[in-house]
Length: 239
Image (cartoon, rainbow, N blue to C red; front, side, top):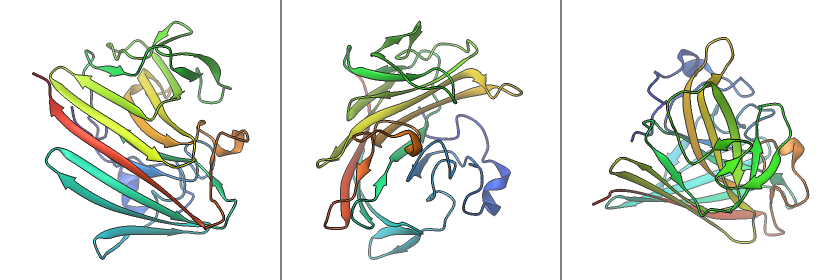
């Protein structure tokens, strides 16, 4: 299991991107904020330079300032985030992790968890229960079948298993909506040159596009002007 660009090289546009450009994949894990789909494409943070100092990293965007501090212990990485913005500011955040997974890999989330299925990139979501929605067994990453769907699952914890490798992702946030987004592209997207791409993405919020977020579907900055959350990632081998 590898957190890379799904076996592909970094998009050559990446070195020259500017804010508001279309997404250029560098592999690994991206910070998508304040939206995932919509505009700016994959948010406003990924295309901007980060500053490092005092054991943390930060990025300045027109409407917010994001700081993260990464600590490691054994096979666990803990990332503490702080977003500063005007009180009332609404946003989505996703740890956009693209994983290089074999066709035998599976995604473990409690059966029956409420799930929103996005059967097409431009379509509205369909309600259902994990893992089977509209004929898609979302927990299975079988060989390419020509499909590409997205889903947002109402959980803050997900485990990805690929043979003996296991990756656990857990999200903690106080009084903010949490979920896990899934992008399951098995050679179904884009139409002109489809490829395999799997994203497993802990989220603040419950939709892909901030423009379509209902009242309780996005995170909101409280009167303090700050939102804090924690992402914990643990990799291990199963016996």
